[in-house]
Image 1: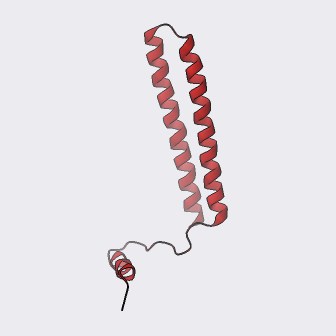
Image 2: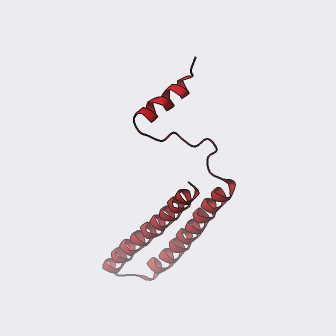
Image 3: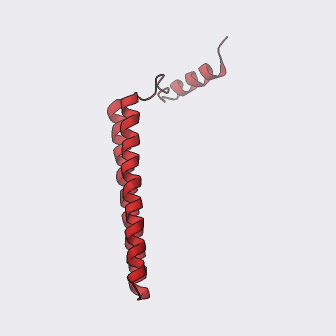
Length: 94
């Protein structure tokens, strides 16, 4: 008698979907992913500090608004770079 997990895997294969890997990611790849995340978090923390300092020195609301927008875009760029790096590491491990 097959388990529900085995039946679900068979249905996935019938639909053309690859079954999940048994072993998961190698320890080295997990460490590289963790390092990629640490670097991104450090960069984001740096951006927050610099943004806070710059906002204190700005008196013009228009400049403040532009600085907020620039900050938001820079944070987004860092997060996207992190996600691309992690995805590349996962694909390389396949």
